[in-house]
Image 1: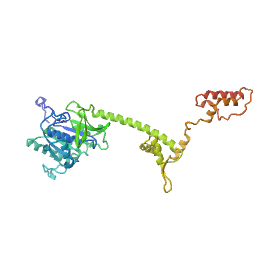
Image 2: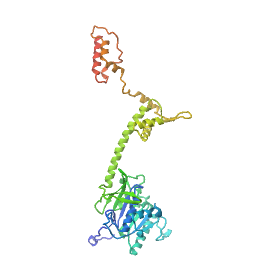
Image 3: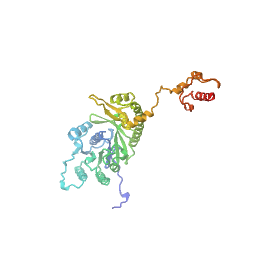
Image 4: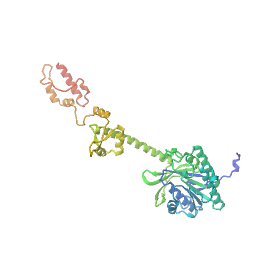
Length: 418
């Protein structure tokens, strides 16, 4: 360990391969779901580097630089070359490395270290040294995807050590290293959750970006900043993919990855609440629909569609209620659904009357002209015909507007007559 006074260390301005996005001599991480356009972005960055373009504007020009591409998933002839052609890359500056061969430096199997990624990092350092000694230093290294070349299945401590070696190599060589990764590279089962994805890569990288689909426009992609340690947080960018190339929009996106994820999480919560409400409504409808017995599957689906229930919601409601599926015992028997026996009796006991049905007692009480003829008008008169109104032991329980007071009066007059 050496102790050095800071005044003896000269300040070094930060240079950029892509202004605000890809810094020289540092690790840059770009992540996103499979198929979202990460490799297309990497091809665009390679093309701009070979043309000496340091951003989206033609005014940001510099010297063209050598590029080393580690591509572990795409074929160079049928995929990589056509994409770089469409992006306008100068192929004289593009150097590709295959996963199973080492065309520039042959390293015997016995000399490779125990961990495969140590050999890959050692090979990369040999490549960078060769370019520097030849007078054409490498400007950009792209590793796509990172887990094809570096071990992404070990422990976090091992992964941190691996990334520390790669970051140190980038600083010593002054070369920008662009890592392309899926969100679940180091944490399986958590794909799509940016807050828990690739923590080791994100810690080591000085510039972290994510590519997401615009929820309002499926073909539109957004490149959003996650972490920028070397400058103020730049605005996001938007693009579409056309004819194997990226078409950037002129206007920037005033949104960070954190803001995008917060809005996405809120939207998912609202969708969940709406889905649960829809499921509850479908469950109650299904109880009433099946309370009289089995219903054929096709009829049930048609009825559900008429009530604006999707087949997915219908299936969830059937499972939630524990409904039974059966088939008629005949040659052309149809499939049907029915409620479980325990639920059938429960629904039958609690079944509400139809909307247009009025209880007989309430209907009788709602006809005062007939009731006045049946009951005596004075204590000495005799009733002509007894009125069958059912049980009126507590007529105040009748919950119909305009009949409660009438029932109480009739009950009092009946007691007075006796």
